Image 1 (cartoon, rainbow, N blue to C red):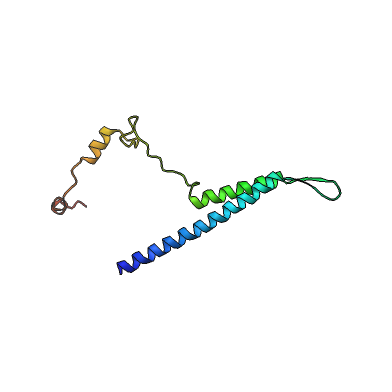
Image 2: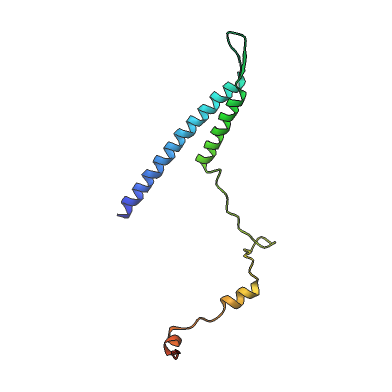
Length: 120
């Protein structure tokens, strides 16, 4: 059963990686197209009017970059571990002497609780 589950997970991982690769290749192709539009952003129609397509092309480039960042997980926040100034020990904001007193207290044993008098 475990081997079947591992095979299934590997198959799913491979499928996701393949689809991600295909989508990233499409995004790269779209970026090439948008860059071509940016190079030829100004067009003149038959009546001599100039049309500037720079802004729409820049918006499209921005959207493509955001999509690419989401696909690669680049837009995810990173975890920051707060440490003391040396960078070696995690800083939680709780003083060390308090942690020593709080966490070093002996916990009551089950026998102590069972032998205790019940007070109404």
